[in-house]
Image (cartoon, rainbow, N blue to C red; front, side, top):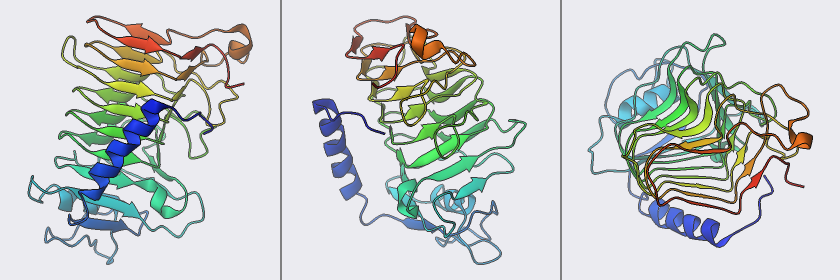
Length: 287
């Protein structure tokens, strides 16, 4: 992605640096398998029946760690630049604070559901203060990611596309990303190709101070081609959201959407107030 740096972006990643530095002594799991096997036993060691650490096994271990600890998941998948984890059933809801960094595998890690899109969620977080980056999440029914707590951060992740960010594989009928809480940040992501919205606050009058910044919404990862969501780009239902420096474009299936300056409800302010919507580009590409 080739978005310009801004003060908002710098501030966000200053926050990220502080949070990441605080996890140095927490539980550390290295995913070395694309398989979807469960952990053999909950003992602090991520280990399936073949001696590998899978994403599912790591989540199972993390959910049994003390709630006061912050764990992290990184990837060491030797499959070139396109490692893909295809889950065959719903992953466990993540109940602890965790950092998931897909960029550690030398590129981006894909977490994919089934082609029929019957698995409800890709990653679902019931706790707050988690950080997710470097993933491509697609082919889930309800949403690619659901944050149900406060203070989560999602950045440099594709939600609704393939690992290249150029092919729509969304399925996500509600939204690519669902937010239930407050003080969440979504930045420098591709939120495109979803059958619902790109991102959506779920509860009316509950969320406060969610930030959506420097995302491509309805565009592919290059920022040059339309890859529209079926419904809103970003839908907010709470208070004091910040929506800034995003690029919005695309009505799904309409190749002329960019040229015609069309966009299906780029920002939908359902209710609440005190929102800041500024410096967004709507109905065009990054050029």
